Structure formats: structure tokens, C-alpha cells
Image 1 (tube, rainbow, N blue to C red):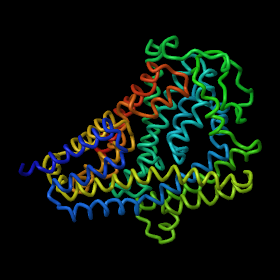
Image 2: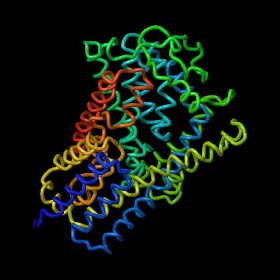
Image 3: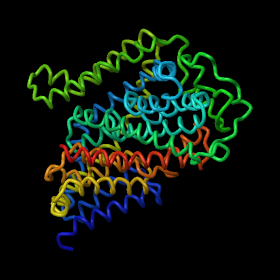
Image 4: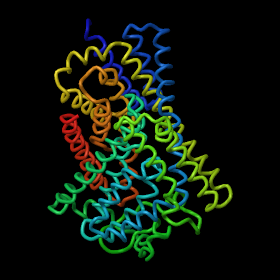
Length: 476
């Protein structure tokens, strides 16, 4: 096959892992390992070097981001147990009012609350979004559903400490502070622009409440409690405009979101998150400014930031929650982080094999003329993989792994490659995604409505993010 052999074998490996995941129902982690082994053997590495590369790729990435993922998930689990989410949303509604609520809600979910694992975050906040949708005027249900989808998905892929963003930073050897510095504002701007466009087209006939929203059941027509700051708002939507689903979603919500009657004030609940963000951001600015103080490097390291935040969260939780609650939260956090770590690690294995077989040199020769082509290529690969696999994190990690060897050799900032992979992985979220069906059930939409608020809207965000990233590449 000549010089094209690495590209052909990589294409076969990617096609194979997609078939394994979709048709054979093989776990994505196992499929990625099998794809990496095939690529190594077919690419001429030999059996011994292939296995060595797979192991080293896994270990190297775990050394880079493994502990960060664990600490981030544990911190988010404790914040959930402290009831921070419900109180924060209630505060946003009081301060910003109904008109700005979808934007503030989406940006908050997509940035500040990304320390909470996506499924937990979705189940915790979706009942609040559904309830708020009936209170913020026309198209409220649609706007809050779109806000929920944008916040969860864009945050995963672009905003630290979203698990996708953490994994991408590790794969491309990007300091976590730099990823935060560029990804945080990119996620916020992308969410606002996409939600604004959705609102405009919804008011012009794109959204049809009769066909896109489910009918209220008798049990769900009870008015929502008057005090949105209390945890009781998580269970039921108020009567009035919009609609919510007839699925029996109340019990899972209570099981996940139920908190002790007396929880700490909002400021105290969120206080542990503040030092973590400040320390990470300080480290990023220090690196950009060239500050070389050992103390600044130590305190600004993301590991120290997340560790400090977790310790503070433990102290608050021990004083506020019943005995044993902290241990239960940690148990849940460890179960959640385990699957993330495995998937992230095997993504590193595939990336290491891709580099070893020489795909980077081939792509370098083809796309070294400009910065536009590599970024667009990363986006396209991630988008195609996501349409096939249905996992934002898996598609982003795989796309970045394929192009990771290329980034250092081209005139492209690695952080832009990571963000392009994250943006591409958001394209065309559809029925193969578990998130799609969670949004459909928890937010009271028909499948037709979910295709609009999730598939179309998040795909629009994917394109908007790519355009913004391409603009950033012109000035970096």
C-alpha cells in the first residue's frame, strides 16, 4: 500500500470499532483496545511492540489526567449532595428573571457545574428545567429543553472540568489551565449563540407545542411549590404554559435528588468550587505571563486546585449532611469515575498506536499548508464518529487520538485541535445517544421535539464552535 498504508489501516480500525460497538454491541472500551491492537499489528509494529505501545499509551494518559478525573467527579458528587444545584437555579431565576433564565441556566450547567458527571447532572437539573419552562413565558418548555441539552453536551466537550475536555487535554498534552482559559469562554459563547438562534426560529414556527411536547398527566398538573429554593421543586412541574411528559419520572428524581431537609446556604454549598477554579485559572494566567515562581506553579497546578476544592467540600459536607452521607457520595463518585477512566485510558492507547504507525507524518504532508484544513479535518472525523457511535466523549477522544501525533508538527496550537475535536463530537446527537432519550423523557418532549431541542440545536452549536475556533486560529 506504500505510504498510504497507515491511513488505510487506521480507516479499517475505526470502521471496525464502529461496527463492534453498533452491531456486535461490544463495550466501547473493549472496541477501542481491539482497534488499537489491530492497527499496531497491521501497521507493522509487531506483536510485542503493539502490546507495549497499547500499555504505555494507557498509562501515560492516566498519569496525565487520571487523578484529575477522579477528584473532579468526587467534587461534583459532593456538590450534588449539598443541594447546590437547586439553590443556584432558584437564585438565577430570582436575579435574572424569566427572559434571561434559559441563557444563564445553560451557561451555568455548561461551565460551573461541569465538575458533576453528565448523567448525574442531567437527572438532577432536568426536573428543575422542566418546571422552570412552564413559568418563563411562551416557548418556555422548548427553550429550557434546548438550554439543558446545550449546557450538558457543550460542557462535556469544551469546558474544564468536563470529562471530554479533560481527556482531550491529556491526549494532546495541553496544560489544564490553558484548556480552561480557551474552552470556558468558547463554551459560554457557543451556548448563548446557539440558544439565541433556537429561540428565534422557535418563535417563527419551528416549535409546535401540540406535536413537540407531551401532554400533562393528572399527577403532574399539581402546581409547583412557591419557594423554588427548596428541594421540593425538583419533583413536579407547575400547571400552565407548556407541557411535561407522562413518563413516571418522579421516583428516579427523588431517589437521585433527594437531600436532607436542612442543607447549607448556597454560598456555603458552592464555596468549595471557588478555590478550585481560582487556583486553576491562576496557574493558567501564570503560565501565559511567564511567571516562574515555584509557589505559583504548585498552587496553580490543577491537581492542587481540585484537591483543595474536594477537601473543602468534605469539610462542608461533614458539618451539614447526616452521618454516612459523605461515604455514600464517595462510593457513587468512585463508581462513576471508573468507567470514565477506562474509556479515557484506552483512548490514549489508540492515540499511541496511531502515532507509532506513522499516520502523523502522512497527515502532516497533506495538511501542513494551512491551519484551516487540520482543524476542519479533526472536526469532521469527530462528527462522523459521533454520528456512528453516539458518544460525545468516545468520538472526541478517538478523533483527537488520530490527529494527536500531527498537532506538534503543524502550525496549529494543540488547544485548538482539542477544541475542534470537542466541537465535532457534538454534531448530530441522535437516537444512539443515551442522553437523547434522557432529555426526551425528563423534559417532557416527544421524539420529534427532542430532535429539535437536542439534535438540531446541539449540531448548530457544533458548527458555531468550529467557526469560532477557526477565527481563533487566525489570531493565535
